[in-house]
Every structure is written in structure tokens, then in C-alpha cells.
Image (cartoon, rainbow, N blue to C red; front, side):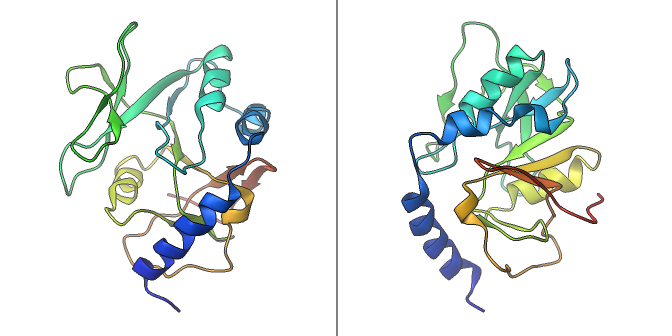
Length: 185
């Protein structure tokens, strides 16, 4: 099997070829499948170039009564911190170019995390960007459900795993929600 670094390069290239105009609408159409109670706090993300964009899904969840929080990198070896965005405020690019909340915005604990990825397998493992931020966050937020957001074509037969790699509970694609059997954190 290839190294994670090699797999990341392959997965990035493949993901670029999967982008299509109806993805965001198709993803949002599956919002009810997430079975999120009104008032729940959902940890979303602001899509970077090429990522499966959950913006319309997040808007739908807000319309259904959910509260959205977005991640901020606190430190290199720490879990992500999630912040609500005060009305009228906008995200700012971090040192890495990722749009993030400001540190003084309200910190909250999500009960569901929408997780970006480069690839995923049927066992619920994901290939991320290599920083370990989501793995640390999922380990820290043991009771939060983790839903990968992806194009259906990002699924692969298997991924290399390390002891710190955390499994997803499900993956939401434009084709629907794919529950992962046997997940428990």
C-alpha cells in the first residue's frame, strides 16, 4: 500500500475531478437523514478549494433550527476549538489560509461534527490532510457524532491506519448517508 503522503496527492487529484455543479444541492437534500434535533450544535467547516462544500447543507440545518459552529486551530497538537459566529461577523483567513472564527467569539461543544476529507473507506476511516486535527478533536469529543462530507467518488477500498486514526460514524455524499457499522467512540 502507498504511503499516506502519496495517497493524499492521488486523492487531491481525484477529488478535483469529482466536483460538479449539483453537488451542494444534492448534499443539502439529505439533511433530514442526519436526524439532528432542533437546537443541536453542529460543527461545520468552511470549504477550502476542491473540498466537498457543506455550505448549503449548513444553511438547511440552520433553517431546521440547528446552531452552527466553525473550527479554529488553537495549537499544533491540540484539538480544534469550535466557535459560534456572532451576527454580522465574518471568518478571517488564518496563517494557513483557512477561514476561521476569531478566538474571542463564543466557544461551544458540538454534538455532531461534519468532517472534511480527501478519501474514505467503508470502515469509516478517512484520509485527512496530515495534521491530525480532526483525529484529536474526535478523540476529545468522544460523544459527538462524526459525519464525513465527501463526493461519492472519494470512497476507496481501504486506507492505511495508525493508532490515533479515529473512525467516522457515517459519510454523507450527494448520493445519501452511508452509516458505518460498528462505530463507537
